[in-house]
Structure formats: C-alpha cells, structure tokens
Image (cartoon, rainbow, N blue to C red; front, side, top):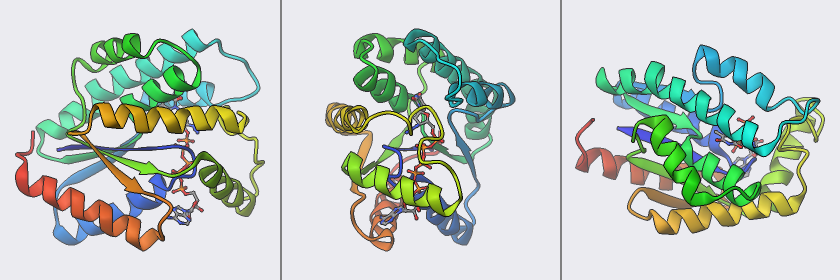
Length: 214
Ligand code: Z5A
C-alpha cells in the first residue's frame, strides 16, 4: 500500500510520520519511509538546488526538477519497495506539485496532472492523508520550530513566500482533495497532536483492512 502525507508547511507531516512509524513498528508490518524532494540519490542533489533560496529558478524549471525527482524516486525506491510487499509512506508526492506549482505558482493544473502521470508512469497513492490547517497556523508552527532549531524563519524557497502564496496552496489542497475524495482523507490538523494521530491511525487501519498490498 502506498500512502502519502500532504499539507502546507508546518501542518504536522513530519510529526504524524513519526507516530505512524511507531504504530507500524508495534504491528510489525514491513514499511519504508521516504520523501520528496530527495527520496533518491539524484533527488538529494535536486533537493539542495530546489530549496536553496540564494539562486532563483523560473517556475517551469522548478516544475521539471520536481518531476525529475519524482520519476527517479518512483523507479528507484517506491515501485521496488511496493513490489517487495512493503507499505510505502512518502512525505509529499505528486499532489505537492499540483498545489505548489499549480495553485501556488499559477501553472496549469490539468497539465500538471498529465505531467505527473508521465513522471510516475501512472502511480498514484492508494491513500493520501491531508493535514488540513489554515496557512497562518502552519507557518507559525514552522516559524517557532525553526526558531527552536536556530534556523532563520525565511530559510528555504517556500518559507520566504508571502502568506498569500501559502493560502493559495492550502486552498489548492482542499480543492484537489474534494476532486479526488476516494483517495484523500482530510484530517483536521488544528487539533492536538494525539488526536490528529488517532484520526490518521483510524483511517490507515481501515484502509489496510480493506485493501490488498499492491
Ligand atoms: N514542493 C513543491 O513545491 N513541489 C513538489 O512537488 C514537492 C515539494 C514534492 C519541501 O519542504 C518543499 O518542497 C515544500 C513544498 C515544496 N515547501 N514548503 N512549504 P520540506 O520538505 O523542507 O518541508 P515541508 O514539507 O514543508 O515540511 P515542514 O515544514 O517540516 O512541515 P511539517 O512536516 O508538516 O511540520 P512538522 O515539522 O511536523 O510540525 C511543525 C511544528 O508544529 C513542530 O514543531 C510540531 O511539533 C508542531 N506541530 C505539529 N502538529 C501539531 C499540532 N497538531 N498541534 C500543535 N503543534 C503541532
């Protein structure tokens, strides 16, 4: 089963991921955790360029770098892990391109769906957990976390974007999730951490019980 975590910055994906892994460890199910950008060797090189705020990248170049990262990631990591019977959990995947490059940057969403089809050779997640929170809340959480870690609040290409950009992204997530409601589970990420994890586990358990590992 292929599960992806999506949401705006600071929505809580990394935090939820740790909770999911702890649960999977307890159940002794085989799984791997990966992420985009940066899930493959090539992806790590691309991630450094993509998130480096010191050099500008035009939206089309950014798009094709994310797609290149994904194509390699699917081929080298995700498909082999699924074929070996693992649950694969990816922190971000194709929906991030649709909302960040589409709703955020203004590229054509339908074209992005087609390009994702091509890059992934048709591999869409079986389940996408969308952590749904207002952009202002996510950014505030990320700001506090970065301050605790001694990082600048504007480190990274997207951290430096205005609130309006993140609000478009958040709107994009909700819109695209409604369009693909069978795949998406929308979780209220403004709730306390324990409740978000509990809701996520209920969905994952339900899907694991009803789906065959592909
Ligand atoms: N991107 C793109 O444009 N196109 C693409 O195709 C792809 C990606 C694949 C990667 O950033 C960037 O790439 C991303 C989109 C773009 N940029 N943005 N924005 P990244 O991987 O470096 O970072 P991120 O994905 O945005 O994740 P993040 O900032 O680490 O956010 P998070 O993982 O969702 O948040 P967290 O670290 O779990 O939580 C943040 C803090 O909030 C932390 O202190 C938690 O303890 C706290 N938290 C979490 N949940 C709660 C709740 N429920 N209550 C209270 N506090 C909470």
